[in-house]
Amino acid sequence: MVHPEPLWRVRMRLWRKGLGGTWEAFWESRLGPIGLGLILFFILLAASYPLLMRFYWNPMVYDPVTGFDFEVFTHPSEPSLRHWLGTDPYGRDVFSQLAYSTSREFALGLLAAVVTVVIGTMVGTAAAYYGGFTDTFFMRLADLFLLFPAIPILIVVSSAWPLDVLQLAIVLGVLGGFGPITIVLKSQALSVGVRPYIDAARVAGGSDFHILRTHIIPNVMPISFLYMMFNVTGAIASEATLSFFGLLNVRMSWGLMIDTANTGGYLLDFAHYWWLWAPSGLAITLFCAAFYLVGRGLETVFNPRLRKR
Image (cartoon, rainbow, N blue to C red; front, side, top):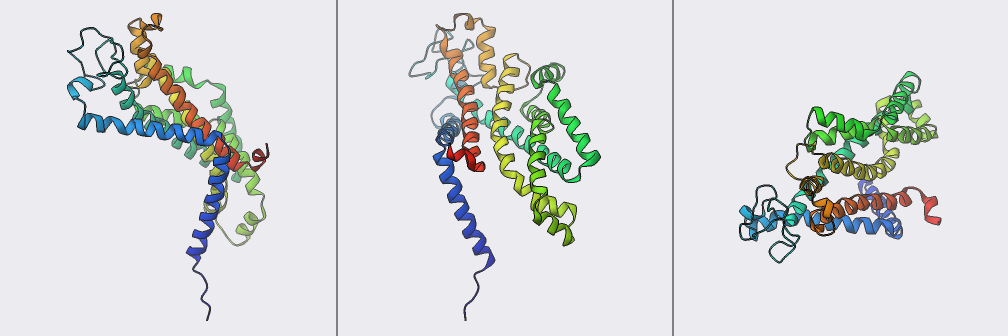
């Protein structure tokens, strides 16, 4: 007697097959693996900070905020074996600041992107599925968010209420979630909503919540995940801008490192004091580029027409 294969095994086999094809397409995109490599580099950089502080560095010297090296006579000091990227005007180790800030940048970027995707997915699919007043209301709201630039709004809000990392991530997520991602995901949800299995689900007695959760949202999630990568870059750029103006309530960040150099007037002689701005500026650029390149790689996965180019 032949026993049928359990359903969970069938699903697992199909999932592995689909994952293998997805990874192959992602790897062939060329841009995606570069971005993934950069992300892995920043993960290692973030992980190095607690390890160095525990086993190698003296917290009195290498704390990114309160540290000070009394054995170095002049600050800022150039890179050396003792301070790999030199010290800032307050005698703090630049590499320690860079590594410490990396995990905070990850938290900010990913949290803001998740909030954006959750709001955009819920609003976009609801507008596409229900139509009528719901569609009109959310689309006009999206137009309103598109009308006002995010950075000036963030500057005004941060000037009145200094934001920490969590609050900034939520504000960025809300601004992004009700913006262009809603329009994009609504279009994707509309294309899913006209497929025959949606009508079959309605005929079978499926509730609106069941149809949205089971059939529509899973089909727009690839696009949501794609835009999640792009939203990380926007969140990091926004944080760097606000930190540069000293408008955030953060302990240390890449933008704040550049602000420290600017406040001391060292950006006027940027070529001589390059270690005060170049590491953090390069980190911001590469971090944003990493998630952008991963997004471009995922774009070739989710849009098969791009693979032929």
